[in-house]
Length: 149
Image 1 (tube, one colour):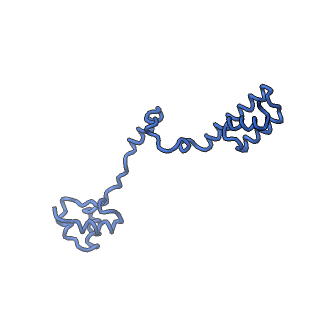
Image 2 (cartoon, rainbow, N blue to C red):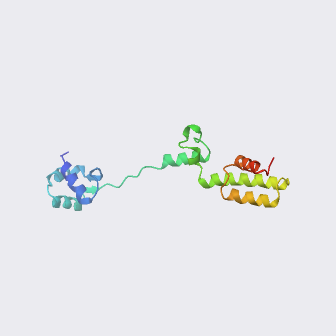
Image 3 (cartoon, rainbow, N blue to C red):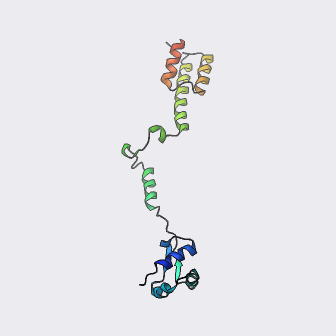
């Protein structure tokens, strides 16, 4: 096979692609090696002796398999986790978990008659405003206020 490195470079410029995507007909490599100008290369492209290879796209097979395994809870243990627990759970999910626990605690106190309706409402609204970090924090706050013993 003749040296067609220069012709490939010129063809890549003409076609606007990378040199690795240029295909030269191996049977006509002698004719291609004679082409020296851009016009000669353009003519060879018209003749089909030089062509553009299709783009290759990475296969998604392995990625799809991982997703399927993760659905079955495979490969999601401590060894596979990157980042803090807070980065793996959305802010909204964290908020919902926290506020539901606080509201449940307040409901239980109200139902047991440990607090009256107005006190319940006061702490409910404070919880909604994000005043308390946890149920323990809410409990401590209520104890210091003298609402709980």
